[in-house]
Image (tube, rainbow, N blue to C red; front, side, top):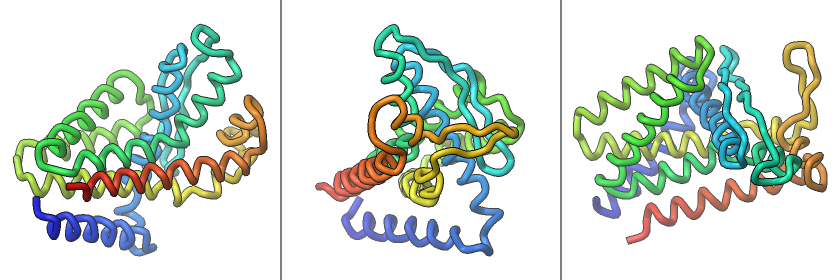
Length: 232
């Protein structure tokens, strides 16, 4: 792919993303919000597995929120450290996934591979972890659309799709800054700690300090992935 094409496809993906943030496109935004929630909750669950725990299931709600259910042990790490790392995994999930998708859209071969990996991961999560009506409907629809795109075998469509999804995922984390700077919230009539507060309680510092750290790490991931995308 030419350098000019790279700039055109990146600019188009950013423009489409910005247009989708307008209130007129609320209905179109909705499935991508749920996809961002899926990245977030999968980040929690997969990180829990990596720290020696288990990933039970996840739920995605109609309002765009979600929750991952997992158990942690001190098999690999101290329990407090495992809790902090698992909380970080969810917060960085969208940025990491977005960075990988942006980097993967660098050329036709890698774009085809990453699109298939993403589709496979969604299908696996549908069978193993997703336990909510809205999650099954929306993620199932994404899986079908991605399968159709792979069968089209159009390089530009695959690259454009992957790049747009990567940007959508990365930017979605910055559209939820209020959650990063939230200490506690209410769910089901119960007050619960936010992820940043969970990190602070199990390590050091304050929730807003960790919110700033997460923002900078996410920004660093974006910059590195975009630079890799344009590297010759």
